[in-house]
Length: 291
Image (cartoon, rainbow, N blue to C red):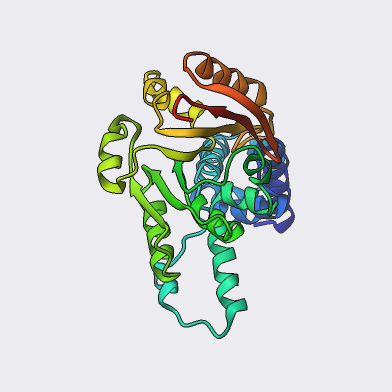
């Protein structure tokens, strides 16, 4: 195999992929090399006396190219970028700095919390508008309650996270147990479950504040009737947000997501009282009839 041919093939594919998808050139090149080395048909093709132009026209390459782009897309669609070994919670850390490093790695293991962690006062403008909450519901939480608990230790509130992702729920509850924080808890939950069963578990009828971060557009794309449940959230104030840019591709989706959010809010009795705009996230703070 000619090394310069392999290098040129990787560069050619990398230019195309990084232009379209949110992946760095270094990460893309590394991934491509790994995938090429696993593809015997393509490796054999590279050993033949062919030019790059000829290789790009072959069915072997076209099949590989298509499969690889799908793999890149799938990897970027995965919220948890790193697997966190839950046994790490049981480890005895040498000092507070080492323990804090573990918490930072935990927060950075999830795309959305990593973005929000870049700004330590992410929710300050909201708390300047509403009274300090005693109870917070985080709907579609991911592992956001962990970041919230780290950045707002002065907000002495009960934080309940709900999400359909079992691994996120397990991480939150493991974190709460590890830090001996009885104010943070999480439950597996799907939109179709409604809120009655949650009230039975938490004994909280109405929450002071609810976070619904990047949930509405996704939920409505999967279930057009989800708005009915989301219009009955048992909270006084709710922050609805959406993404400004695609999770996988280098393109803005803000106009589309904003249209979805506003159409949803028009169907509800919620009153918009503030526009939220942070980094790659935007949305609306609403006041409900429970306030």
